[in-house]
Image (tube, rainbow over all chains, first blue to last red; front, side, top):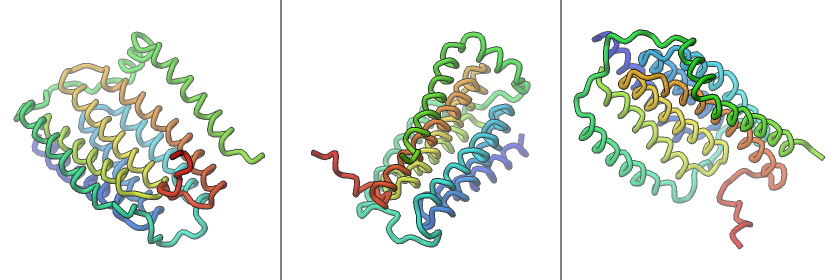
Length: 164
Length: 99
């Protein structure tokens, strides 16, 4: 238990620092690489939460596919990959009170409703078979809908991005 | 491990993502901030799945990952189109639809 808490603390600190760098750094490629750190930390948190299959999917889809998309998008939309001065809005400072207020309200609500409630410790790992039984059983209809969403997204991306 | 430590981590990531959406001017950076927000939601789902001893949270987390991948694909295609038409992806310059 202590080891898990220490691991949680280290990974959480890395994630928060990485997320702050994503929204403050002045270079789009560096921001994408910091985002990789946050996504990998999230995958590690999923392992701590006994969700191995979701963690592996996170690594495959996010770090594998989405980051490549981001880097391609960056390189296709910018002439040079150096620093860029105007990545922020002129009124960027308004985001600080807005997000701090939101954070305060959320932390207040969470501490008042969950307090010191502990997660169950003697749970078994969720097997991939159980997840697939859920997806292809009670959640089949959303799965179909999601398949159509992905199909539409692929076709839409091709239609939008092709040159004609 | 407490439930709250995961939920508060997710809340912190969510708020950082909200700050990024508000503050950033570059469309690709806004999409990255949206990825932060979606990841914090996933952490919440998995924390509650473990707390309640159910698998539904895992299924929803997988669905969110798929929807996020679709969103990034379409979003970057849109950004590419805007860049091709205007040679810039600054969001505050896209004001033609204001009327």
